[in-house]
Image (cartoon, rainbow, N blue to C red; front, side, top):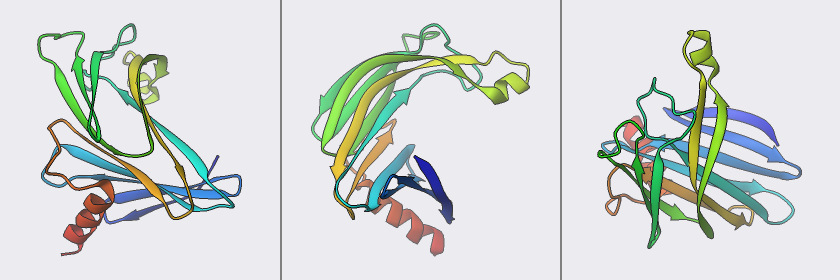
Length: 178
């Protein structure tokens, strides 16, 4: 896997990756007016299909607090078009955080894996504790023909009023050029 290029259209970043004879992009956009993010993976070119998977990794903590031993517990429920994760922060389990994820992909697999020993080099440079852990709650993926994509929209609020990720990205580009 090789990063071929990084571009930015307004505030929207796109990474172009090369994997063997395949090229694909990842585009990420915050959703204006919502506490949400839209992510799109698109297979640009290649001799045949490309299987892409994306792990959804989460934690529920203050930005300077670490959870090296046990990241937030998650109760994940599959719903039509995606899933809802209810996270219980270790320091405040009575105040759960909800993550609503809409998925346009061939595959959705709910998981409960802990990724430990994650090094945070900037925290280490600042002299802070720098080893953390996070929880993988899902794997999303698709087998893509060239020119096809899959997408994810994640929000801390229910997202039925939000469009698909490609539409949200286009709307944000239009908003920025007004």
